[in-house]
Amino acid sequence: MTNRTGNLAAPTDERRCTAHKKGPNGEKGERCQAWALKGQTVCRVHGGKAPQNLAAARRRQTEERALELVETYGRPVDTTPSDALLDEVKWTAGHVAWLRQRVQEIEAQDAEAGRTDPDADEDEEQTSGPGSERPHPLVWGVTRRKTGGDDWGRTEEAAPNIWLRLYQQERAHLVKVCEAAIRAGIEERKVRVAEQQGALVAQVIRAILADLRLTKEQQARVPEVVPRHLRALAS
Ligand SMILES: [Zn+2]
Image (cartoon, rainbow, N blue to C red; front, side, top):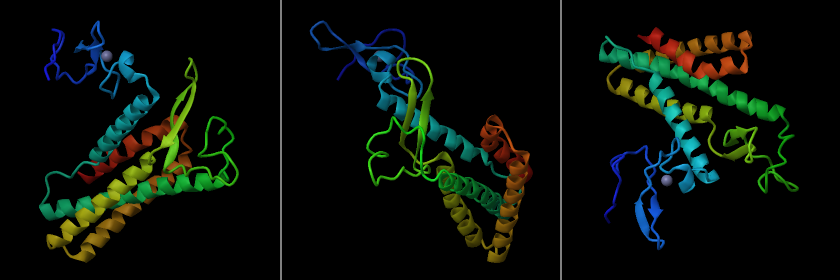
């Protein structure tokens, strides 16, 4: 298949809409070339505003942010391989402990809310009707809120909570580094000690954050700030 494209950008320019204009007889015309919406491959005219596409774009963006966060948990430099592995075990254990607490918090909040949702009026079959349970917030949540315009309201969808996802990623990573450390000949006892040290640090950070009673805005910065300082500590 050949595409006739304009001079604005190469067809591989991933920030341009990939849809094609319709010719006078409804046949496939030249490529659109308008800017694609954020996280999408199409512009607003070519379906970028469709709810499912917006939702997919948000999911992709969340995924990218999560990935960045995990990568933020940098690796120690200027060290021996075994020290690096032990350090990695230590800090990963800290991240896991810290993330586990976030996940547990969500569960606790959910239990506290009595699994009732006062503004669940827009929800359909998943939440209404006798005997139906509200989906658990770890796997279901508000992914969008909008207060103005025709499409005001909020969007809820099935998606693993960001904390749950980070927690699972870190757990998998911890298992890997522990295995690598033991395989590398670092005795199991040392690996365990490193693990406990990391978890202890996470516990302290958690306690401090709780006592500070952070505002929502401050809390939102925690996933960026805490790993950054842990990384600084590790190096
Ligand atoms: Zn377009």
